[in-house]
Image 1 (cartoon, rainbow, N blue to C red):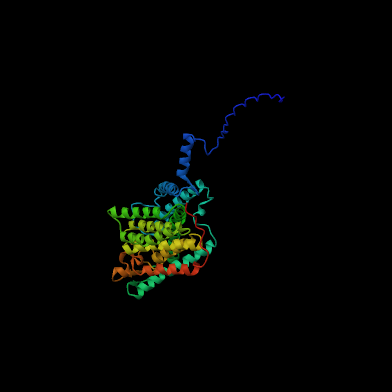
Image 2: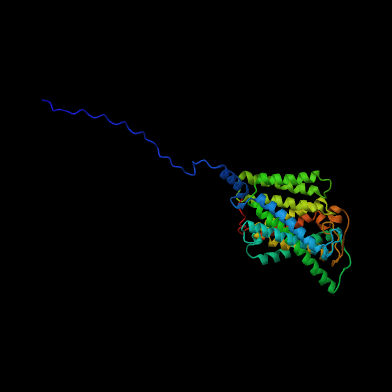
Length: 384
C-alpha cells in the first residue's frame, strides 16, 4: 500500500512589500517660510559674507550720515564755510577734509563691524612694511611732481617768480598744507584704493564692471555740466579690452583688475566737479588712480598710495605754488605761472592739465613695476 500522504496546506499569500518611508531634508517639501528665508539669505549673503553691492550701499549711506553729523559740528564753529568754495587755504582744506576723514572712519568701521572683519584696517590697510611703504610713497610722489615741473620749466611752459614766503612762514604753511594733504590722501585713497577696491574685488566680474562704468559715462553724457568728461570716456575705453580679455581667459584674481577699472573711472569722474579741470587733468586723475591700484597689488596695502598722493599734492600746491585741479592756493613757498599753449602748460588747471603729466604718471608706474614687479602679489580677495 502506498503511504498515506496528507494534502499540502495552501500557502499564505505573500504580504505586500512596502518600502519604508524615510523623511530626509533633501526630499521633504520645504515650508514656504523656509523657502523665503533661504531666498532672503541668498540675496544678502554670499560666499564671503555680506554681498559687495549691499556693503557698498551701506557704506555710502553711513558715509553721508557721518559727514552730515561732522558738518553740523564744524560749520557752526565757522571752521568750514560751505559758501566759500573758491578759498583754497590750508585751514579751509584741512577742516573740509576732516569732515570726509571722520565720515570715512565711521562708515568703514561700521561696515567692518557688521561684516565681522575686526577693524577698518581690513580694507587694504594691513600688510607688510606699511610705514616704509608710506614713506617711499612720499618720496615717489614728490619726485614725480618735481620731474613734471622740471620738464615744463625746461620746455618754457612754466616760469618761476619770486619766493612768496620766508622764515617761520615757510614752516607754518608747510606744516598746515602737509596736514591738509595727509587727510586728502587718507580720505581719497581710503575710499577708492582701500574700501572700494577691496569690496568690489570680492564681488565683481567683467559684466558688473562694464555696467557700472557704462552708467558713469551715461551720467556724464546726460549731465549739463562736467569739466573734462572726455578724460573719463578715455579711461573707460582704455580699460575695456584688457578687462574683457581677463574675463574670456578666466584669469585668476581677475576681479582685482575689474575693480581697478571701476574705481579708476570713478576717481576720474569725481574730479569733473572741480572748477578748472580739462580733459587731460581728468584723464590723469583716473590714470594715477589705476597706478595706485597697482601699488596695492604690489605692496599689499594702500599706504604707498596714501603717501604718494599726499606728497604729490603738497609739492604741487605748497612747494611749487602751482594751481591744483584749477584751484589757486594761498600760502605757498615758490611762485610759478604757466606760459604758452595750455596743452603743454596746463593753463588754469596747473601741471595736472599738461600733456606732460602722462609721462610723470608712467614714471611712477615704471617705478612700481621695477621695485615690486617681481615680488609676490598681494593676497587680493577672490570674487564671489
